[in-house]
Length: 467
Image (tube, rainbow, N blue to C red; front, side, top):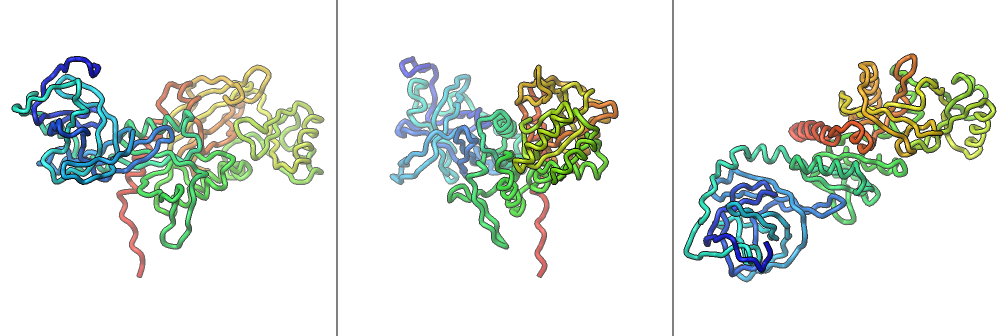
């Protein structure tokens, strides 16, 4: 309905309303045409950013005579304005956009957030919100009846508080698929989620109160952190995760696990020691040992892999002995660290990516290389489809994740005549390929795991310091 339309409903000077976008099914508002701006009771008001848009989280006691009902809400933040109240006091308030429901009618409104704890009405409905929408009958009260407090029966103070977490996602790419899906999964469960740019953070190290800042703003109040550390900022990203760990915050993947997975040589050593099967792998420092490395992995064809490469970059198939010696020599001439690895011919240019959360594989896909390439990475043009993996493959993926000390991992494996062979374990796996290939809600599964263990950590009593 536009402002020029005839208002379709009549409201009294007080009215029972609902704000469905904020999960508030019943709130009694004073309708005041003398006030231009609407206002809503709010406490613990906290603005945050998803990296794509600004939002604000706040708590509310929607019913003055039921202080046990406590609801936490999140909404899009559209402005911050100076509002003058009826007593003449000016206050800088956050302005949100939400949906107002009166009887069967709904329409969008702007509303300011302020503490109305001592007032008889938790909401004031101003003239801007009802202009062109409703006519006020100043002689009538609750024209559309009373909404029962029973609508809040499923919301208790403890449940509403404990079920809401403040989650930080460390990412320099707020618009990419994985970050957006994690934000959606968190917000759909009522959590506050903030995307934190890894390289914009600074740290102060003290013996008692380690802190992290964005600019001059301290990052506080987080219950959990999801690290999405890019390969180019591994060193600083790990230091930042360690700082969160020192602050007692639950991290989905810890700094040690991230470091182990990023150091391909160390990861291979850990997996080999634990008996996880992998393609035969060799490394040497001296150029004089090139022929020995080639022989150790069964001769050509073989794979030459840079330790710092990601997404298939720095991985070369050497099909002959001469080509292998040439490629290895060239990389060594550039002072690059590399591995030489057995080529598993029977895999046919395909590998398996398993997404592991905790002790469970929640999704698996087969990636097949594009024509003329042997690398199956989706970033290199490979194709993917969801598959059912064997019990042995499932156990291998879970074991590899556990050995490297990770809770979330993308485990890449080849199918060989001797069973599954682990290629790599990724501590920041992307979700786009596997969600589209499997049709599964992987982001949701990650959030379910995170909220379970973050809540457990929050409930544990702090250890008393020895005196």
